[in-house]
Length: 607
Image 1: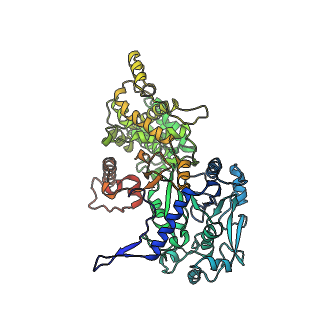
Image 2: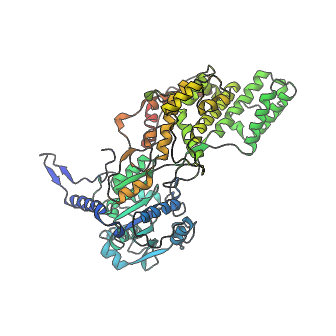
Image 3: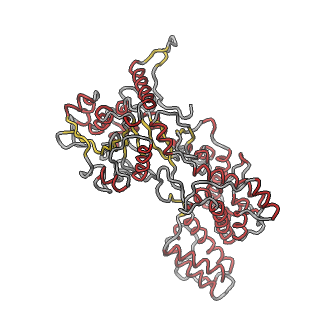
């Protein structure tokens, strides 16, 4: 059932007889929704009405028109262009990001409560009660309509803008921002009248044929009701009712995407999250790295070496690294000239290790735009992270392992020495990281166009090229890059599996079907399912633009997850032992989160 949509329970079995008992309202809902999906296949595109729903992310706190890792309005521009190209009536919709924002928000930094938002429709309370069958159930929490939220005092207000047969609407706030505990513990919690009026407007006044929820994530799927198997009294079910829902969701978040499927009957379309890039250094930390570089060249100099170590210690204190390095010498009265070379190397190595740890922390770079191919830099950042991991089930060695072995070192030993601040290992680890990045860049460069983006991937492993390269003794570009980075004995044959895999991954990154996937759902067509999760650990998540699902619990932890977990557990135990005079802990407690296990394919479980 990977990728199944519409998880509606329409019957149950009697305990005594085993007889199947249909649930009439569920059967009717399932039939209505099936007919609406079917209608998307047959209705002429120029007559189809599409409602694009935007949010504020984090819910009710960020600016309107934001979502996790997504440039929402640039992506809406791409979708509008695709709709127009396919024959949908988009009226006079602007095709510039800023103009779309202006027409919907009137203020690029508008919050959900902003009075600047464009009003698309004012719904009288009489119309609201007539069209919303559960409206009176909301009065226990919110009093009679119109209430204070999404209201002008007399009417319920729907924010957004209509362009031909396309409506771009702003999903109202959750309503419980001031008292979130009330939502968790009140048995009768419910959406407010404004929230209900928005979905009533989409279905019964605008008469949308489908709604496209735009980005991770809104509030519909988190409204009160059962976790799974919605009943007619669960609010996600009441709100979405018979509207087909397509939901553009971040590929690395299959757990909450599953909630959107189960509770709001949404068919998900995955989008690529921006690649993680090294955080880098600034100010004092950058100065500290430069001092360490100076020390590496002058460590044997008994005059200048100790002076540089004194500066390193002083700058480390200024940067508050004393909180991370337990035995950093105290500033008062310390003079490196009184230490031997080994002790100085130890101090510098621990500072260097901490600096490299900060510099290599991964941060997402930029926002993703639907349908736009990655830049060369984004592709390199993604592939460098993919290349780090050993994949024993595919008989692929990680790139750092192959590079380290060319100088007779085992990569885990290098990592261990780096973590302990052994200067030689910190330097080697830095060199391996730089060589790996240079090699991946050499691969990506072959397929980068004049705009700096990767649209088509050239096959670097074609038989003819390999044949002539072998005859002339010519090295592959990535091998040459590694040699130039200081590893002349690297084995090109051992590099072949990982670079064949990286080339495949690059093709998957470039082959995103996000716009195509959205259009397939809006046309009522089958959208190919695919796993969600971290594309670094599992490149099968790529290409994006497919119907995302989570995983089979019996299939985790994977072999790769077990291997990674062994290293993590070893490091954890070593750290605890070092901090407790060689004593290991007698017991360890783990908190297992479904989200993390889905993203990592069972690493937490394996630990």
